[in-house]
Length: 323
Image (cartoon, rainbow, N blue to C red; front, side):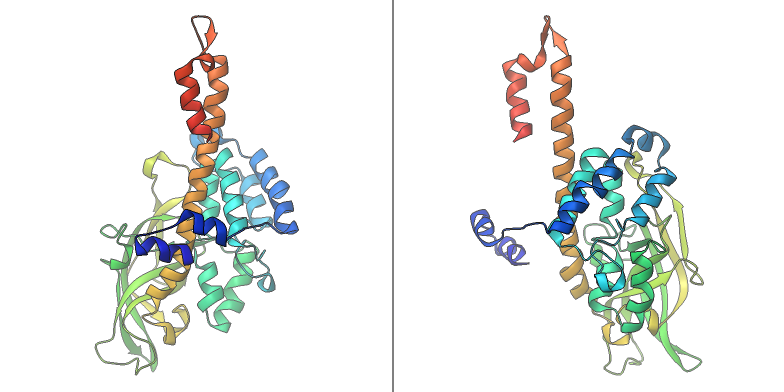
C-alpha cells in the first residue's frame, strides 16, 4: 500500500522501496516452494495443457489437496496463511513451467473472494465458506469484468441491483452480465460486483448505495455459470457469469447489509494488492522461462557452423533478457 501511494503521487522511489521492505520466506513457505510447488511443476506438461486446453485430473487434484487455492486463507480456517511475498514466489515459479497454471492459482489467491471473506465477511460467511475454499471443495472466482467494463471495472455497466423486501425479508434483485471470468466454468462460488440502488431507503442507514459484492454458490437460483470461452486460445478456465432479476438475500451480500456500498474499499484494499502482485509475478516467471528457452535454443541453433549464441548481437539480446 505504501508503494502504491508513492506511485499515485507521481514520484515513486525504487530506492525507498528497497530500503523499506525486506521480504523473506518463512521455513514453511520455503519448504512449500521447494517441495509442493516443484512437484506440481513436474506433473504439468505445458505442451499438453496448451493442446488439450485443460490440466490432467492428477494436476487438478494435487492443487486442491495441497491448498494451492487457499494460500492466503488464514490457518484457523484450514488455509496456509502465507504472506503475499510467498504467494508471489509460488506464482513466479509456476509461470516458468506453465502460465495457465499460474493464472489458475493466481485468481483464488488474489482476485477471488477468499481474502475478501477473511477481511470483510460476517462470522457466518467465514465459517461456511472459508473451510470449503481451504480444502478445495469450492473453487472461487470473482465476477467483475463485463462486456463494457474492462480496465474501468468498477463502472459496473450492465450489473446492477435494487434493494427490495420480499415476504418480510430484505434483499437485492440483481441483473448482471459478466465475461472473461477466470475459473467460472469450474467455480463453486462467485463474488459478483453490482451497482446497488435503494430508491425506497430500505437500508435505513445500515449500508449504502453503490458498488456492492454478492457471494453466490453455483446452484443459486437464476445464476448461470458458463459457457466456457477461450480468449487468446489460453487453456486456463474462462467463462461467463450471468443472471436476470436474481433474488439475493442480505445474508449473501459479502459482509452483510452493513457492507452494502463498501465494494470500492474492498476492491482497492484487497484486489488491487492481488493484481499488483499476481500479474507482475506471472510476468517475471514468463520472462525467466523465455530467457531459459531462448538461451538453450541459441546453443543448438547454428548458422555458418557456429551456434548463434556466439554471435555478438544474439549475446546482447540474451544478456538483456537474462537481466
